Length: 266
Image (cartoon, rainbow, N blue to C red; front, side):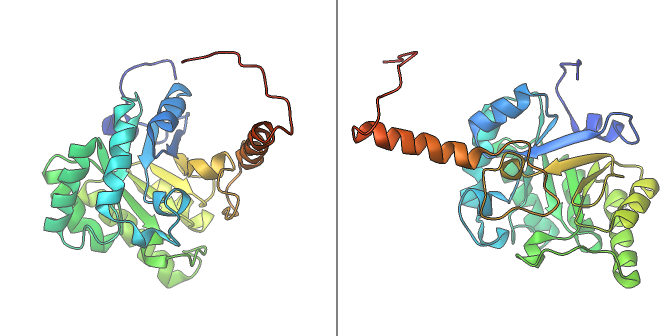
């Protein structure tokens, strides 16, 4: 991207059917946000995946809003050109009124848009948020806050397929500026992408979407204990970190020569 203007929800909406697809990654802290922004990633999602890959919970449903907000604020302090989107933690948008309270808290912490799971059942909450001036990215297909760790491909059976199609139409009608489609059958995702006027951003849903999103830790091999089958890591940081720690341990215990110090900040 050569345009250095701030990424906005309107920019994302305008990328529907664009030749250059949208790339999005999760970020949960200041340095990661800085690095991904410097790389040109246009969307940074402070995702509820934080619960698993940073905080060590078994799934996303254990994440509390008060745990989530400091991570969102840290990403916002990086002041990225990228659009900062925040997930709604599980259980914080059970009614449109509750969604509005949570949405305002997320915006106050630094979110420039929000994301929540659900289609038809979430449409009233989306409509309320949009009416209050809060931009919403929707999330349909597999819903991790409902599925827990039971990850599976969805949309292969006709009844489920029709339900997800109805979800896609509902979130667009409610005013979402884009929609994440997770772990959906590739043919269904292609149909959704053709039908909607807003961009679809896929994760484990094939290549027909208007963009793709990935958990940062899956991208760089930073969570080796669990890796989704659809994730294609571009780096493998876990063994590098282990080796660096082993070298430090050996140096500290006098079993190896210390590396020359190239720069001292003290």
